Length: 53
Length: 292
Picture 1: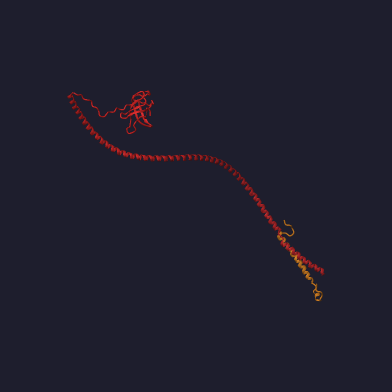
Picture 2: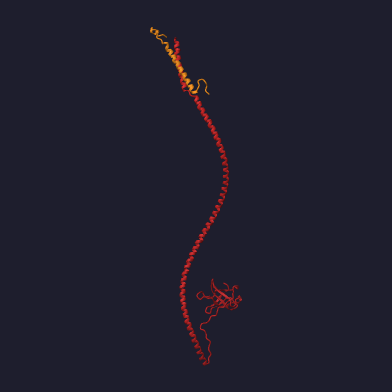
């Protein structure tokens, strides 16, 4: 994961940060989806986990 | 980091993004069941309330209808009574109308008869007026004739007075001449003959006894118009008596009367009376009878 390796002319590889960013994007997407679902649940039913009566 | 880890990271990321997209899409398009529930519940509550109101209205209307039914029943009973009364009145009115029609026809007949009577009376009145006018004209002519006759009568009376004076003068002269003739005849010794009237005097009419109940019938056999005598074919054998009066008829016309003077057994002779010289004269073959 160090930038020195690329400078020595080694095999070009994708830095680890890219995968981190990809994971971060996936996490963000999941988080955004969860937040959206939570918002929808709260706005429509008034609760997040209980079954409305 | 191994390649497998990298591949897993990429797959995880892609699947996460895919699933998250699906989830977000589903959640975004999902129906709001709570809102629907609330709407349905509100609709249901409204329906229930409407049902209650409708039931209440139904009960009110039912009560009202019952009341109206009772009232209408009473009204129907009253109308039935009134209908029966009206039917009775109608029957009475029809009967009266029939009577009125009958009376009207009677009055119509009476009116027609009265009109005819009036017409005949008017005609009779016109005829009477015409006759009255004719009589008035005749009366005027009669008055004129009466005046002329009166004037002629006065003239004749004057003439009669003159003639009476002349007659009186002639009578005095006759008496004087008779006295002179008597003197002359006495001197010569003759008697005076009684004076004979030039015009024969007629006898007065004798009243014949009534012969109504006898009923004798016969025929004239001979007529002497110069002496006013006639002979009939029945006599004392049939019951004829002197002074009995017979009526002479020809067919259905009266000619004259015969008063019996002399009666024989089979014939009788009598004088003719009530004979009008301007009309028909009795002749042989005319019927004689005591009753007309």
